[in-house]
Image 1 (cartoon, protein in one colour):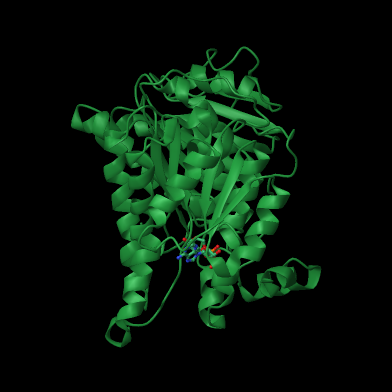
Image 2 (spheres, helix red, strand yellow):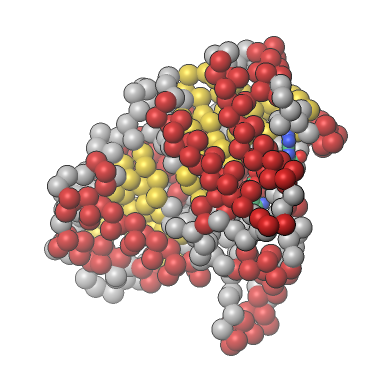
Length: 469
Ligand code: NAD
């Protein structure tokens, strides 16, 4: 589906008209283009509050990038961080800055009391207006629940409001701001997440708060171009839309695909799996024995599975008073029950390999609720509950996370009434809809072997939608 308004405001006439009428002027998002593309290029400024502990790990990650790295100096509340990286150059924030930053990266893990929050102002006030279009802000903090005394926890929580407000201020530049909360001792697990959030892969992910814990599995070295080599990926609803993009992206990253979809989608599914050299299984995931059928297929053809992506979903919208019972039942069955049934069967037969990944595709409706979607929102919210509960139970390095797409341009959203569709596109900080690839890239990051510390999170892919938290 074409976003005609977006196309119009990106013409010279349309831009001027939109500006003079005070209408949104979304800037095209720069997305990932080629496999050997550096995760970040240009000039990156790092800074850290006194006492922060992630700066050395950040410095190592950024030193290995194609970026020219600077660290902030000359400001009292900031640590003059020679530890930032051997390759980083000092940059005094006191004078006029003539740099255009591709990213601003700030280690706030050392902020323990309210006076130290000033470091946020001191770092971002002189630099924020120098952030380039499609730029990135990444803040590193601590999980408040792991901070004591309460004043420390409060300051670390405060980073959430700061990050989300920054996201709203820089969205019109197509720039994003995100917060990684890293547990003490887990700084070595930051890399896959820092690389993702600073890269064009995260173009439509803004204002997210992600917890990175310390898993009990050893860190693994992987091929940076095809990190999923040797992995088997099960993707439900793979024949079209977001599922198709997930399948293509995981295959691009080296995984072997097992695509599942309903019999009516057989032709598209076969075409896709043939092209990606994977296998197809046509099956209605709500059928009584679907979990067992899938488990049997996995066992016979692959011996096990590494990545399980519960993507299949349907909407059956009606206000509750007018909703037929079969609309309710179907939305719950496809969007919620099927994921649990498939996982149960795979786990009962020990078919999810160690260090496996389960990702559930939820929705913003499951967070904010939506008119006419009591059934769908119940199911998508239930998926979030499932992820949070299962994250505490899974062992052998298996993680489970959810992604919650906002407005994504697919056949599902093309079927919406025009006014609802237009509102969905514009009501976010980036003033545009996302693409299936934005959801797929987020899932590929969660599936990365290096993302072992990311467990039990819900990551919205919504351009910082104004709906929900
Ligand atoms: P889509 O309708 O284009 O694709 C859904 C896929 O699921 C289809 O291939 C369909 O055949 C398959 N499917 C449906 N019922 C099935 C069943 N019983 N068994 C097996 N396969 C089944 O939708 P999409 O926009 O690509 O959405 C993908 C996922 O993302 C869904 O879970 C959806 O709820 C979620 N989501 C989408 C958006 C959006 O804006 N498009 C927003 C939030 C969440």
